[in-house]
Image (cartoon, rainbow, N blue to C red; front, side, top):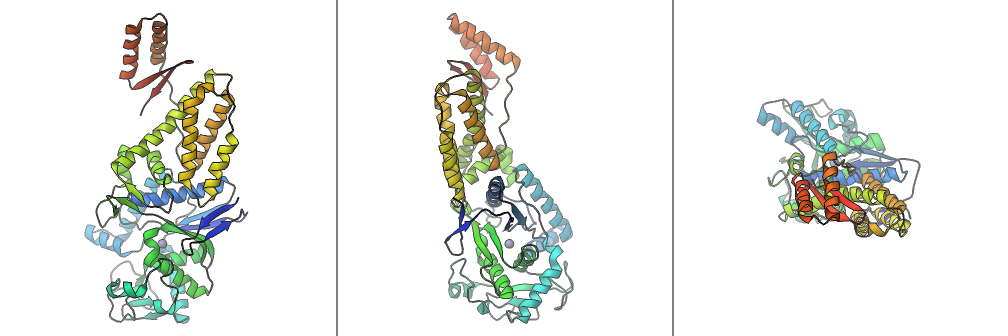
Length: 458
Ligand SMILES: [Zn+2]
């Protein structure tokens, strides 16, 4: 089977047969005016895992994520703090990359900044004006939404219902409240660039279109992003690009990640109900967040709660314990039942190729983990090791940090051996005292027919 994705524009399944040519993947990156929260991380982790998966099956990918470094929110934050907008933008861009690093997000090839594409943005706006899709007022240049009949298709909106309350730019000269700014004229405030319409700055939507058109062309493979960006952001990207090129569809498939909910509400800066990435990582690991994200389908919402975080933490921990226990058993055992690993591999691959169904793939991996944990003592050691290395490889491919193999301190190993001797000579009180000593330094002891298994629970 080849990879299939459900295009969120049409709802149809789109095949992506393997090609030598890189798949061109664009995902809307951050607006750099604040720290990212785990709602943002959800999108970036999902696409990181997806790009890793493509490369792992020898499908080249060019993965681009833009940095929105020209935006009203950045300008407002700079004014609030009395610093330059560049200082704010660069500071939070660095913070974003630092957070990605902590989360083991490594698959993005380049991060073009909107501010480096002003020339392309101006050319695109000129083309839109020339084709009759855009008009100028005293305050800016706008895209005329009514000229593009498919506007609203992606978000399946009835535009007449949205229109009355929709006032993004206050400009009485706008022909329609839904018309969005391509260029905002400025009067002395920064940042500003010279343009055929006077000094000003671009609108948000046109920034992404200028970047993708320059780097990927007018039609490309996949556009991804959070589902809350469908309207108006992605609708506007389609309208701008297709109006200029006359070509449809702009991309083969749209991939939208579901929202991260907290107490039934969307996690967002404006609702102030967010958990920043650093806050999350002060209690849990990057693997915990990755498990939380990938145990949901990328399109489904995630209900975040302390219980959900804890459950993900336990799952991430069980990977570590499985790695240690399977190595322990395989190292001491020579015979046993053979395993049908190929069947598991097929199930996991089929799940990932079917619209990148990570929850189904993880469920199968965790079935394998449980099976080996429960049956290891009766399995053939070669098969345990093969299954172990396959499970860990797939998890690493999805971006989980590999387990760190624990080295049991020599004093502990000595106590454990002493305890075995005590147990053999029925000195149970002494044996229990030694178990307590081992537990006091944070280790558990499981007595197995092949000896005690010592493990440090983190
Ligand atoms: Zn975007």
